[in-house]
Amino acid sequence: MAQASVAASPRALTAPALGRVAAVAVEVAPEELERPGAEASPPAPGLRPQAALGFQQPVSSFWPLVKVEATEGLLLILVQILALSLPAWLMGVSPLRLLLGAWPLVIPYLLAVSWMLFMAPLVLTGQSPLMGRFGVTLPENTPERRMTFSLVHMLSVLCFPLSFLCMVLSPRHQTLGELLSGQELLARPVVRMR
Image (cartoon, rainbow, N blue to C red; front, side):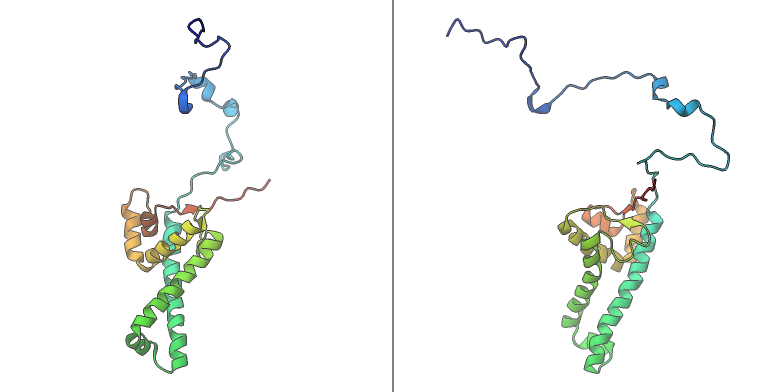
């Protein structure tokens, strides 16, 4: 055994452990970064240049998110009024009397109805009832995370003034639901046709 050589043969391949690879410096001249068609004629004054296929120009989602939360807040109030009026009508009492007399039963009922308004569409499609109208979507694939987001989105819609304040004051203009869940609502990409 003392005569055996332990040095690797020159033909053997060596790889760094666990994929750690040293950074490779690539030198590129500024002229090489310009597009070959950059010297072509400039576009007509009334026309904007077309973006390359697959390139999406950034879209601001601040005002669409404000519109989504405000209109969903109005929709939520309407659904809660209807959800309270139906049992009150069946019992023959006013909705206010039902709410004051049976509040331990009515409040969980209203919260469940309100959550179903947001949970079912978000879990199935990734959009709450009015997100599609304003071009906003939740880019999340797992139903569990969508369900969690539906709960905090409902809270965000219920506390719309606080959510709007969060959007104005946060550096990335995130709603209360986005801040609580760590997920982000994005503008839906526009489908390109050929």
